[in-house]
Length: 173
Image 1 (cartoon, one colour):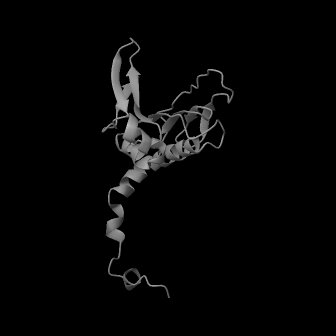
Image 2: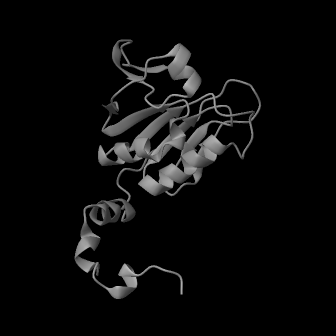
Image 3: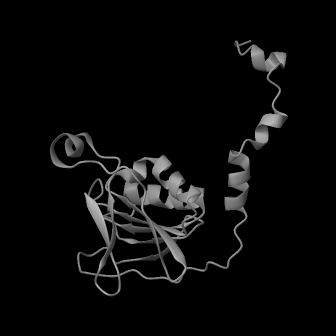
């Protein structure tokens, strides 16, 4: 499955190919993509995800490392429209875990999740066509994202005590 990015002039800018496919898709339908795709519009950096990639946190973590502001995630989803759709819930969790916005376009009511994991806006749950829009505040201070980068960079190694007997003997007492 692919997602095409079209410029405001109607030209194809790039294409994202779903990388993490279901067994059926990879066996019978599609060739998986191999690379993340990012693009910028008016100073906002976007990444793309498709299908069931929301169940692979590493896809979304890679976009955090690529410094995106928002991931555009489109899916048919795992089921019928509901506020408890697991892909919608996972979109909320990944937005919060990576401190960026996630646009969710799927079977559950589509919408946009903020960096704190809360829905900023959602389409109605009825099957009528709708568009969800919001303003992204790129000037808001975000302390979590820079700290997570420091924490993931090996910060904790200097504080570990690998020779501590309590760490060496993990047998139940």
